Every structure is written in structure tokens, then in C-alpha cells.
Image 1: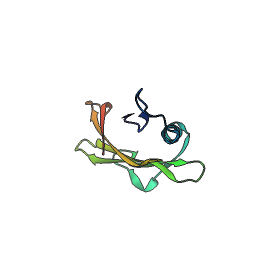
Image 2 (image 1 turned 90 degrees about the vertical axis):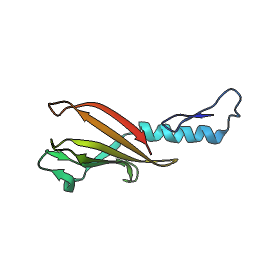
Image 3 (image 1 turned 180 degrees about the vertical axis):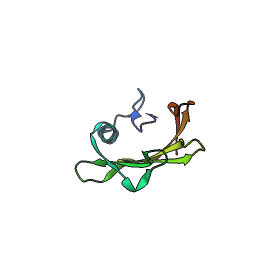
Length: 116
């Protein structure tokens, strides 16, 4: 069995297909594809950059936080170099840390991430 970055497990030809694996994959797909309500943390407003640095995405059925995103590591130009996501997935909490690269005009031109 191969586990992809999303957490979905691919059954290989020599694996036993178990209902639990299909249910787990279904839970992950539901998490990734469902609509969420965005809640901006107005207390996180950075007037110098005109940006909010914390945004949560809430599950519609219970209002719980599915994904929390936080900008940090501001450079001397006012660009936030790190965007940390906490994903409260059915299989557990996953943290994804994005590194942001800007051009001379302050536009993001590259993003890479590492899962922790």
C-alpha cells in the first residue's frame, strides 16, 4: 500500500482490499473537497501590510475548525515568508508549512511546503 501526500492510500495489486481503507480514503476525500466557511481573525490585522495573518476554515455541520492558516516570519519589506496550515483531518492533525518567495513588487512568485 502506498500513502500519498494527501493521506489517501493506494491499494497495490498484492494488497488485501479492506473496507476500512476505502472508508479512510472516503473520509479524506470528503475533508479535501467539501465547502468550508471562512472566518478571518480580525484581531490578526497587520495595518502596515493591510493583511490579516490568521484565517480559519470552518466545517459547516458543526462550526469546528478544519483548517487554520497563519502568516508569520515578516521580512524587512513587510512580506510574510511563512504560511503555516494546521489541517484537522479525519486521520489526525497534519501541519503543512509553506515557504513563500516574492518578486521585487511584493507578489508571491513561488511557494513550496513541507509536511510536519
